[in-house]
Amino acid sequence: MLFPFATTNVLTYTDNTGAGNQFYYVVTAVVPAGDLTGTINDTSNTAAAGVLVYASLQGNLSVFGLAYTDVNGNYLIEALPVGTYDVCVYKVNRPVATSTAAITNGGVLNWSYTWPVFTRTLLPLTISGNLTNDQVYELTGPTSVVAGTTLNIEEGTTINGSSSIAETSQCSDVPRS
Image (cartoon, rainbow, N blue to C red; front, side, top):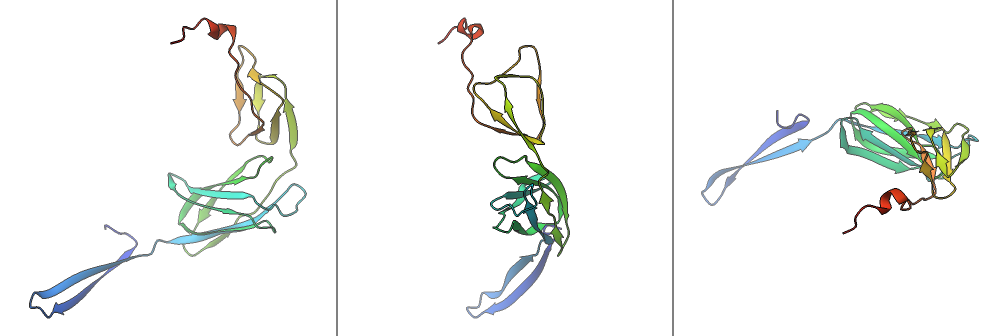
């Protein structure tokens, strides 16, 4: 079926100019959908205003919905097509929160989140090891990875600040055009 969620009606009328019957097709599509709603709270269990809640359909990132929380921490994303969504909660200076949500036809899924207590960590100028998404990291200046080591950054990790990479002696011998 070309349109799996569509109904087709044929409208027929007779043209008075003698051209005969004219046929017009009206296709009405109703995609099964539901809503995602909830409340986002800060670490002190108080409403978190201005938080971005973003939901993207697994396997099809072009299908998504988003909303910002109001002063009471409430949000509503309406008419998400049925399916399983990756939900991301983002606010500056907070760890990114992720989860999944299953949207059903005509359903209203209440998905709420409260940030756990997290720490803010000042990063030294040279780093190695693991950065996890349960903390917020602050760059203190130009930062580099310790030579010969690996830096693992967990998905959803928040790093604040800016840094630049300075030219080193290893790069100075590279011919410039």
